[in-house]
Length: 119
Image (cartoon, rainbow, N blue to C red):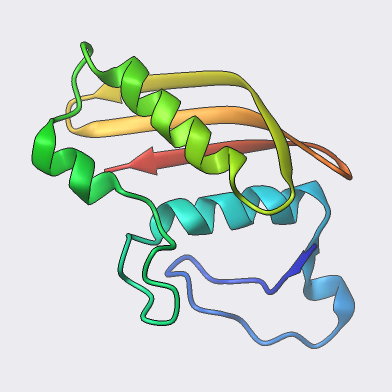
């Protein structure tokens, strides 16, 4: 898998050589993070792509009581991302209104760490 580089705002950067492209396990982890950032219905071409965090937030709020359930939903969503074979070592933390999630992704080309913050 090969992905174009992006800046902090998520805008694609120009590529002057193939070494500027992101590849391997890091590309798979980045793709998973992109898909978590995409809200369901955001992309007109594929409205069903994207994560359901807004739907979750309409029903519940992040709390210690439902943190494990939310982390499980995130993990199941990530398992559906292209290039991800398995998700291991899931860790999560709630800090006020912020939910931090991290896991180890097993890909065809090796392991990668995914860290994502829902805020």
